[in-house]
Image (cartoon, rainbow, N blue to C red; front, side, top):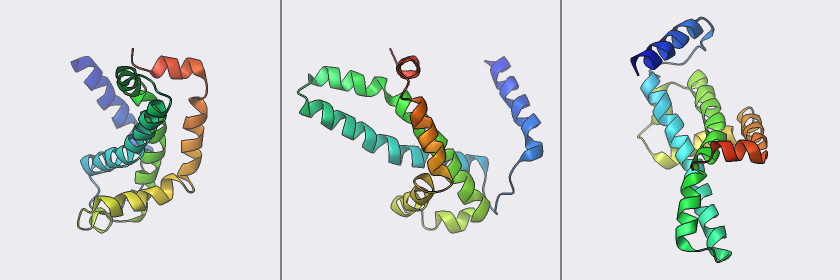
Length: 144
């Protein structure tokens, strides 16, 4: 475990030379928390839709539940690509305190959604979703 953390820290240190110019007050923890917020706003409705479609097809409830859990990493992959892009673009253009405002989840996800489903991040989302069209890739990512 210590070796993995040390390796990650080393990789992060090597990558700082090309770091973006972020606006005031953005901390790594804030950045990551907003990526998580964005992913939840994409993945949770997608899982609900998956469950609703499976229910409409009269799949047994236990099978739906386990299938929904197993595809979470697949959905997470596509959401991560778009959300890292959206938060990155936001952090480069708006100070954290301005972006975060009073903490309203709906307002923050609205701001990120514009980028996730528009330029430049929609390309990242489409690219990640295209990767998921390969059954072998989907199978490799699913939980078993």
